[in-house]
Length: 396
Image (cartoon, rainbow, N blue to C red; front, side, top):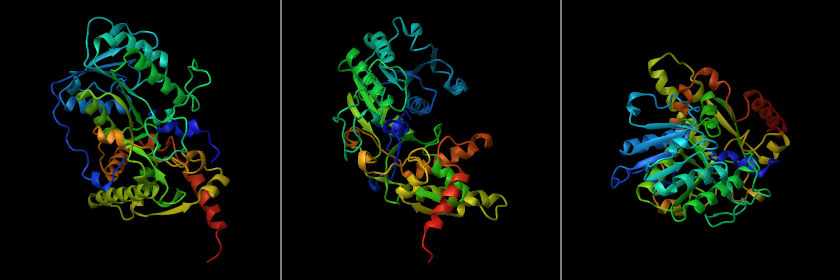
């Protein structure tokens, strides 16, 4: 596929998945009780990953302070049950004054680190008053994507111009690598770096993973990329949030790839889970309402080779979300090593649970939002490609 490496992987990226091997099918076990309630400062906290972390931390009895500009989902925590959250507004680029003073936190979770100078500014201010700084990075920091089973010690991207401040598909990974270095420089020995791949689940505003459950729910013939055994890799935001909280509660330092176990997920499994979720939700709906032909229960999948998709101008990752042909410079796609994170406590809920919850969340959105998905091939273009594919096949 003729697509730039950094642009393709920008979505894996928390900047913005999981799921599970058979041994993990029971879902995450409840974490052991923390030693004592912690005071945690969250840089960000109102986007996609942040709210999942907030919910997990509150459920564990921790005290939270959120620092952000107050512009992204400002109403997110207005409900009275969030009254105990301290919310501070400022801009990490220009105004950290509300974080000055004597207030101390046991830990900081930085979900909004994109520019190294911003990280330097915040860690330098907070270092004397915190015990641990956890920075959410990305697997896009790695210089190469053709290495199967690549671990945390692999070489990182180096930007030609380390002073660049524009976040693009080409600079995203390199800037994240510099953010990691900036945090470690200001808080040596006190920094934890978590590198997720594609983050998915309820609340994801990118629609990269959501496209597949939503597409299955629409029914009909589904255009699927490559083959059923094509690898993919992602992590449920709720599993990622639980893992990060686990690291903070146990003061675990180091660097961790937080993703599905290498090679454990395939596009075939994603499509199967998506179709089953659509079928089961439509069947449930029809129990209580007239529904003679629920669309999501009537679907089929047609797998189209990567070379045909490329010839048709169908792009990996954007038109066919969560998929890149695992060959050439992307030979390692879907196979990033996560053994270190799993040994440190990363656990997964079943893929089926992630898909079902994602579809339920998608259905809850306003119709005008669902009519304009941000990722995936359009219905009209999908039908056009399918006609071309069938026309190219020999007569039976």
